Image (cartoon, rainbow over the protein chains, first blue to last red):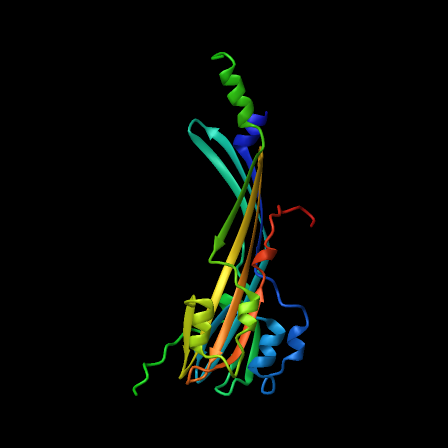
Length: 130
Length: 126
């Protein structure tokens, strides 16, 4: 029976954590068009990502605390033929916070969500001509 | 001996298996060295002398930012016949230094968490 079970049924449980989420409510103390880079770094710590954005900069913080689950059932229906039934809930990636700053390091906007969805498309500016 | 080998292997096949692994990337950051570098006083050169080559240099118009990091990833896995459990925790030390167009540091931020990484298995209902 155990041989049958191990061959026919398998389950997978996965827990992944990446980085730590900034304390809840921290964003409440940050305000667009008044908070500056110093305040944001004090509240949120070192960002995961910094890059140029328009004439200013984009800073992103990211974290994950996710559970994935998988179940697979394999049933022999004929010689050398198995029927497979599977269910998988997979990991969804880093959640995070994206802050946009202008050229004077004043916070312009703040977005929360999955980083893959809220990160603006990367555009590189032409090289400076001195 | 040869007679007991097949049943012994069969028993071993169904015993639970456990795996631990740890991966480290770069040396942990030193908070004292980071705090000795002060915005408004230290330059990009001071930062490089104190901490070595940065992991990443980002150009921000005429300004720039240097990133230093180190991470620890701990994994544990347990296989119980039909159930496989896997837990992975990755934590990071990170420091960013922001410079103006003259290379003078304007801002600094550090988060040191690599030492907080843990071996932990997923538990149902946790």
